[in-house]
Length: 104
Image (cartoon, rainbow, N blue to C red):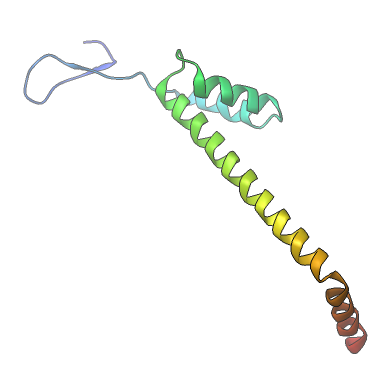
């Protein structure tokens, strides 16, 4: 029996299984994902190419989704910080220096 097939519990013909990503391939994926800019190209290739194994495809899509959410949250945080500090920057600076002078 082929290694990519499993037995059907009812006894009918075996069901096809997707091939899995082996340990050596995961090590290669982790090495490639640690190289800046190369990882973005590789993740986009793995996420949207039709010949890539489903496990690797879902992993790349998950990483790209997390990266997109992180970038959006960081952008929102920067925008909020700019508005907060630019609106009341003088008052914050005066409070900070008075706090420092009180304890020095």
